[in-house]
Image (cartoon, rainbow, N blue to C red; front, top):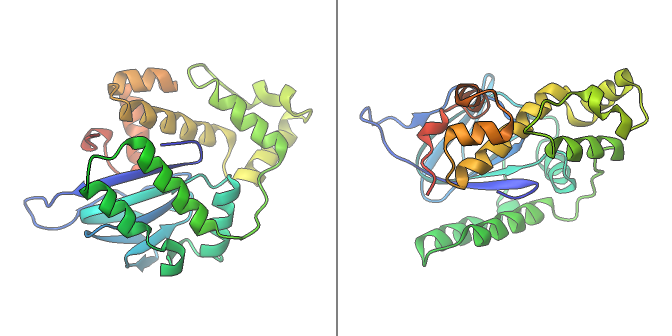
Length: 247
């Protein structure tokens, strides 16, 4: 994980039924690009399905995900300049889109080669993920959110262990609480409370990847307890956090 994105490598093992593992219907505040690294996957929204070697889901889109074998999930922050550029190139009003081979380039092979070869560090994987996002964004021009909203997001990221409300951020923006609330939804697509929950979840996932327990991750990210973290994780990723064995 890094600021603005994350790259997850998943080996979805076959259950006893021999059917691909499938998530619950879920939605998260990130663009998700799913890449086959030799495995197979299928992405569905309630009204559409797209299959292929590379498929993207728009942020905050309800979807299910079935997979078998080795795949990569690239998560892109939709508020970042690169995220907005990728969304502009890919979706055109759609929630689910096949990613053209030109937008992926040779990155599927590079990631697969990296993990099958000599031991690769997390920093090297992060470099690959960032390079892929830059490649997908290309030369597309995209505006970042309003500076006042970026200030609020940066401030909230530093307060996750404590109770946080949008009213606490009013002083950063010189806006009224009502105007800030409206502007936040306009710029991010989410109410502040929902966005804050996403920030807490990404912080918790970072803690888990560092080897911390669910209880530790919940505490450091500002969840009331590990059960609250688990419920939020399932709602946003469609699986229980315990099903992800971080190596």
